[in-house]
Image (cartoon, rainbow, N blue to C red; front, side, top):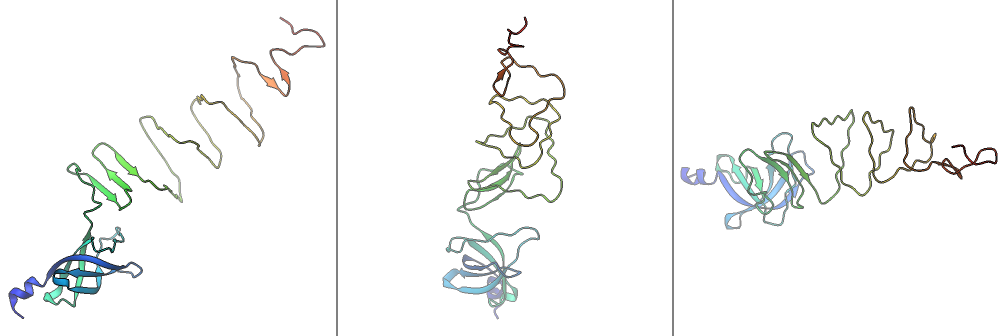
Length: 198
């Protein structure tokens, strides 16, 4: 084989037209220049990172062929410029997909964004330590388990408790309004048929 052609045939740029992610090493089909289609090309990924490319002919592939043999190649990289995050600052890192979901390691924050659901499953203990406030904005927050708070609790929307052993207070209880037990008012009840003492 001509040495120049051999070198030219060692690298190729194309588009992804099929992907089989069920195998231990993903196999893809790519169409290279001049309509050259190669199937069962192994897609080599770094340890700990994987993705399933779109196969509509727009995701780009970069392949290497050993000794220039076009029947013996691997795909080293698959990119999709349609969804890449742009205008990043030097040193920033991001994971993203075609739905607008991303984990973005910015210079001043870590941004997690999804229009879908966010689920975290932890087999051990979860620890969150913050030197600043923690703000949660949601229409409703459900906690399935005991809630223990070491600091003060301040609420603005009222308090409703049902089930269990009811509510108990170890210490004083101060209220600016009336306290009603059943139908008995602490402010307006009477003692022994007479008015409440002054």
